[in-house]
Length: 196
Image 1 (cartoon, rainbow, N blue to C red):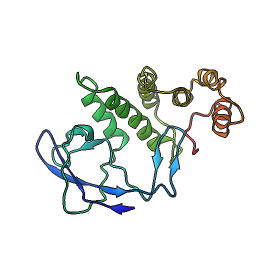
Image 2: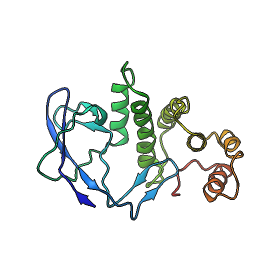
Image 3: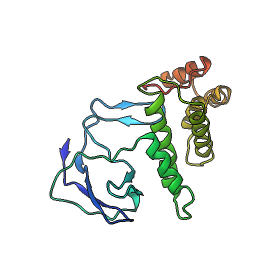
Image 4: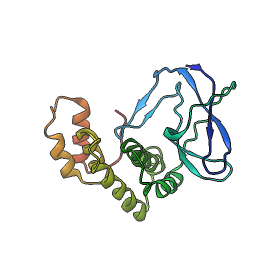
């Protein structure tokens, strides 16, 4: 990976500036792709779409920042925890000018953060109230036209709606290893994301 100049982000509430990672080109070597569409690439740092001001705690979107660059480098990504992603969603969800892409990003990032917290690495059980919460977020995602059938099947499986997931997957060739694994997980009533 070739590091580039850091991006300078400005909090729209208090004006605090922070520098986050910028890069000229990236390498996907060693990349891990999960069934929930999250990718982790050790050699290419991705800056979080949702950022939190380190001073006032206000959340803001990368898509609404004007490009500004520093002469320095930075490895800061601004990745948020599950709790922070929930707080950000509650701040943004009623914004009248939220675009479809922004809505999609805010919702899928909550699914990723939930999986990071409870299923992806730790394998601990999520409290019932968190399971109910993420099921509602998944329902919102399922109502977006931008979500394709394979992601829709994955989200249904993660929400424990295994029969609905299988109904979608039945339209795809069984000789595809990804489809086969999705079906196997649904048939085993397993709602955890898996590495593709």
